[in-house]
Image (cartoon, rainbow, N blue to C red):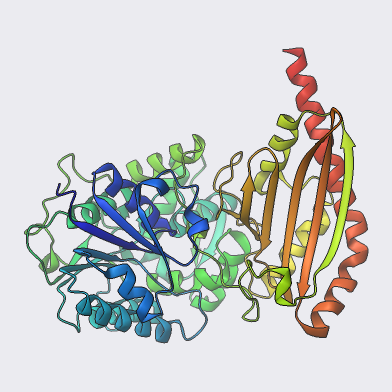
Length: 495
């Protein structure tokens, strides 16, 4: 490996990008990443080993800075959560990237797209193909790798598969569950991507990459059920289930929100099988250890979840909430109104146990009481197109900056002292929830603060409308958090 060859990875805070950066660092590559917020990747294990350029991929000047002196640029950006016109956003972004890469004399662009075999393509797949064409419209050679479903711990496709199979022993499904697909494990997809960084000569080509098996989505569900120790699932096909209805159902049953489920569902309407004529074998040889089959990929993903080794997750990419919300980092001096609900409690519980209780909040661990109210708030958020509560967490115990946490995102962490969450639920304004542990004369003060920056009169009315519920939710949360810490201290004292 030539350590002097500078590699740029875009989308480094996303599911594939985060893992690719880790692998390139392990391969001793010289890596630069482009991210909108450097703080979001600050706790990644590779953060100190890469060059971080903060900027927006829609801004040509930011792209020029990121692409300066780069040999190979990985384009791993998408905007399927950006609304109905996401394809227009993706087109503009790809065009800017191609022009900037050409201006900076980049040698190679590598793009990860999606397999599309027929003319009846979804808007998502059509946009993926158009992105590849626009990237290749300049003079920089583009190697476009097209993949189908990626199976791996934390991928959106895997989360859909896992939760549908676990929660529905009998399910009515649209006819697309019988369509053929050729999934690839995240390990094998990353194998091809990291090999692209070592190409001796620039390549301009479209290549399909797929795993060793071709099967239907229904077959994958049955394999998952078998490996999870579940009985065979009863799958009843119903022709009236449109992609819209299917995505609404998936958004209700699984952690994947409807806005993300719909393009994924639409991509399954067509058969997604690698074309032998677009083989990558002449450029990159297959993995020397062979491809992982579907059962092996599912087993590996489940073991990563069980061992709390999920490196990245589909929800790592920021979820675009209400369009009026500005960046969460806007300071108080910007002139915003900030409404607060602050509560404190003094306890003998140790700082260590208190922090464990704080850091493990949410997901399957719950929100320390008022569960019905939290459930209803998540349901309302889902109804209006938000992420809801079921998005969960990447790790049940540990958090890092940028992690999604139900309908929150970790904004700041000062370990053992402070956790600040930013709301990604649909709101008429911006909201935070913050926990702080303060040492005070041999005791600990736990401060819990909910703050809200409303957007206009509607935002202010929203705050005062939900204020009565604060009297049930927040005191209960603080009280039960401290109780959990005390129980931990008691259990430790008995050991």
